[in-house]
Every structure is written in C-alpha cells, then in structure tokens.
Image (cartoon, rainbow over all chains, first blue to last red; front, side):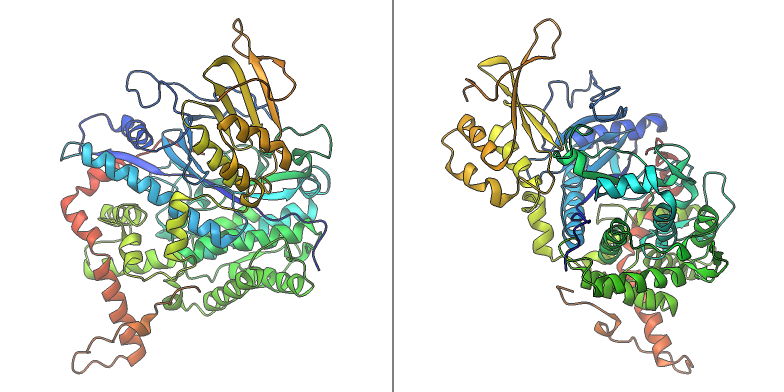
Length: 549
Length: 65
C-alpha cells in the first residue's frame, strides 16, 4: 500500500565546517575569514565569477536578495555549484559550507556526505601544500568552537505542502510537538558529543549533543540566534509558489532542520536522516500520537544532553516520565506499526533496514551497551577515546585544554590528526554505504533526482556559458548575444533525472540543440533580455529563440 | 550492512598480566579500547606538536547558522 498523502522524503544537507589558520601571526579573528576563502578557491565549481578567489576584491552574492518566494537575506558568499556531483560549496559567515546534492535514500545521503568531505579535504590538501611550512588550515566537521560560537549542520527534507501548512499554520498540535519530542530525544543517536558547555548554559563534563546548548526556543525562522528546535523557514527551492497547485512549488515544501549535529559515523548519519524520513512520513499521513508530546521540550533536551549515562527522565504532557531512549522506543513502535500497514512504501527507501538498525541501536542504548555502540555513534566513540586519554594521562581532566583539543580534533577532516578518520581508516566504524558508492559521488551526481541534470548541464555549458545557478534554475548566457539569458527551470526535485534527460546529452549535436530538447520532459526554458540600462531582465521572450552555441 | 562489519571479535584479546582477576569479557573490552586508542594516537602525536592553547585560541569561529 502506498500512501497517497505522502511525498518521497528527498534529503539534502547544508553543513558549515569549522575552519581556521594555524601558524600565522595574523589576528585570530581574521583566521576563519582567510581559511574559508583559501579553501573555496580550490573547489571546482560554477559560476566562476570574475572576482572569485581574488584577494583584493570581494563580493557578497545574494546579500539582501529577494528570490521572490520569501525574502531571506542570505549571508553566503562565492557560491559554487559542482559539475562533479550537482552539489554546492560556498562560504557562510566565514565557514566553508558543503551543500549535498538531493538524494532520495538515507544510504545515498550518507555516501554523498562523505563524498563532499573528500572534496573539502582535497581543497584543504592543495591549500596546505601551498602554505608556508609553519602554517596550515584546519578543517573540522563539527558544530561549535567550544568558545560559544555555533555553526550548523542543516538537513532538508521534502514534505507535502499540505502537511507543512498543517504543521506550521493550521493544526500545530500535535504534529509540530510530536516532531519536537522526536527530535529532542533523538540526540541519543545523532549527537557528536562535546566536552563542556557553552552559551551560558550550566556546566557539564561531557554532553551528547553539540548543538543543544545553542537551542533556545521551540519554533522560529531564525538560524543564527535564539535557535529553535523546529525551524520554520519556508523556502521550497522548487521554483515559484503561491500561484497554482499545478506547480511543484505549491505541491512541495522543504522542512529545514537546524537542530542536529554534524555526524561522521556512518550509522549515526544514516539514522539521523533515515529515521527523520520515517517520522515525517508519519506526520504527513496524520499518524501522530499526542501521548508522546513532551511537557517542556527545551528542558528535556538540555537535561538529556548532559546525561551520557542516559538515566535522566523528562515529563510528558500526559504525566508520564521517560528517558530519551524510552521515548525513542515508543516512536519506534509507532513507526513499526505504520510500516506494517505499508505506510512507508514509495516514500522512504529501505524503510525496513532503517527500522531494524534503529531498533537494534535503541536496544543497545537501553542496555547501556556502549561497547557495542562505539562503532556506530559519534558521541559514544568520542567519549570512549577521551576517557581512555584521561586514563593514560591522569593529570588531564574534563576541563583540560588537551581534552578540548582532542574533542575538536575528533572531527578534523585531515587523517593526519583526526581521531575519527584514524579509526575510520582502520575499519572501526560500522559502514553503511560502500567505498565504491562514496567514491562515485565524488565525481558523479545522484541519478534519481534533478541533481543529475544540474550537474550534466553545468558540464555541458562550461564556465563561459553559466551566468548563475540555483537549486531550481540554471541561467545560461550566450557569448554571441550578450543581452540574452536563458533560464533552465528545474522546479521538481524528483524530476529531471538521469532517465529523463540522458538521451538529450548523448544525442544533441550542440549545446543550443541540447536545451531545445529539455521541454520534452517538462523542463521549462525562459529566455530574457537584460536591459542595458538596468541590468535586469526586462522582457520575456517566447521561449528559447535564436541563441547560438 | 553492505560490507563486512568489524567487531571486537576481529581483534584477538591481548594477553592479561598474571594475577589479573578481570573477567575475560571485560579484559577483552579494555584491550580493544587500548588498541583503538593506539590507532587514534596520531591525534596525540599532533597534540605533542601543537600548542593546545594556541590551537584553541586560533580555532575561535565566527558564529554561524
């Protein structure tokens, strides 16, 4: 039985990295600014703006820009889309940010996330090889500097517009609070772990979640302050919306999740996105249970994060008290029942495998069998390493700078010093995707989403023709007709797949004729003329016309 | 799982000192932890070469999203 009210739970991620320069005498405050720009310069992507990589000019791309579907003031700089795999890398508030191409399965997301880290590592290697011997750029896949500054590992999930509106605009209870209770308790397998506390939160030796200290409210649109458990940003990235239900932008919404830590352990990454796919499918279908709503989700989150022994209980609205693991087990039972009715069919790939691994992990957490979980969960692996460090160096304690250093370096993407990647290279962590799957996503886009056509169009167009790129549109400039821009619209994230457009790429005689094939699979072309006076689109021409390759 | 899963069973238990009263399972876990720690010890080598105070000072980041 497929569920007609649900849409496939497409997954994306935009993850900010920690980056800074060691061995320099420059002011520390400029270190992340410089490191992020050095790294981005070594990433191959489009559009390649004239000023990009230049040391004497800078340009804020998208600043105070309205997309027309929500007035978000993006703070990103130098956005480059990757012809290699359809993803995107840019700088957000001095952090190199990796945005994964859209995928449909949790397994593919785990693979493509590791692939994006390899792309960042390649850039880091080039940068460090060129720097003076005493200098190096450090890159960390984590979420805070342990000095009160957090940066996000955001995930995006495709939802139906109806379900999104229900959750945020119409019937907030129980779906919104059901999601909140799920997220707060899910840190038991999604946390990366960290030493100490930040953001004026009470002291702690070791926390499960890096992000918990920075989660300060229940719901909100903001992402840089007073961060919410559930983010309400309504930015579908599916073309225009608000016009007609026939458009993808009106059928789909994107849940923008800013709550989670960056994970490196494959199982933790897989469960973080896979179980969220299950929960969102249940919410979409209206299968929510208000008996699982927390009385005070924020307090529960903060208390659970501070208890790596998993004994702390929190109150539910119904009066019961539960540990985070006990609450997760209740979500699991409801998901299993939904699965038995076929609720995840055509919506969540590998739902059975996600459920099995979720159950096994929760069972081991319930038994506090941490030895069995250190190859699955980042916070457990890190805790094991740090406790062993203190056992070997009795003078060290949780507040020692050496412990904070090791905490940070767990997530270094350089195998020369990374705790995680040292163990990963040794085969310690339980795998999800194969090495071949990860390696493929370094150079190839996902085949079953629009990411495939995006990557192939960028390759075919090349830097001389690509004027601008966004997730749902590529703007082509025509060297022989400088005023013309052709927008290739990719509003449906589940459309423009390899099976849709590969024949065009293999058979078209030139780039212009390639574009002319696109409307055959519903990809819309709009050719506009830029005004020489105003530098903006002024006249809509009737489709693609007359532009040569 | 698509690839062979490595578990603690993949690694032989290190020999126990004479008179050790730990159970076999506990000793095995401890040995495995020490082996993993040794594997991750590159970070300790880097720690020896890195001023952790300087690292932490330099690692201060602009607040992000």
